[in-house]
Image (cartoon, rainbow, N blue to C red; front, side, top):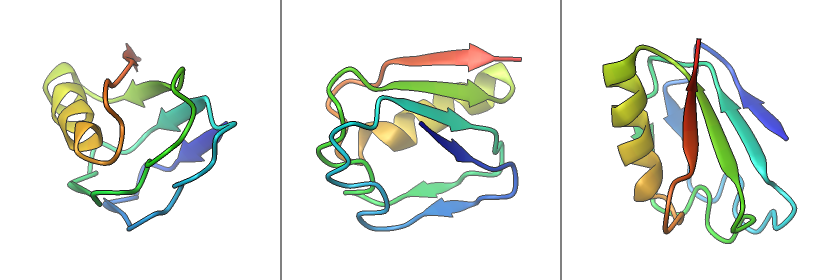
Length: 79
């Protein structure tokens, strides 16, 4: 499990790549505007993202994650 804090704006290249046991990612940042292409490359196929943000920001963050090495983003919006 990892927690991405509320002030994080960017997740860099290969930040979590290859962490095959990584299956839970909590994102508290509504300021997240860039997720590098291979940031989540080869993490667990069952990984679930918990995104704490407004509904519109949540969808935007999920879209950013889609291009980061995750084929299908399994996410849940949390309040």
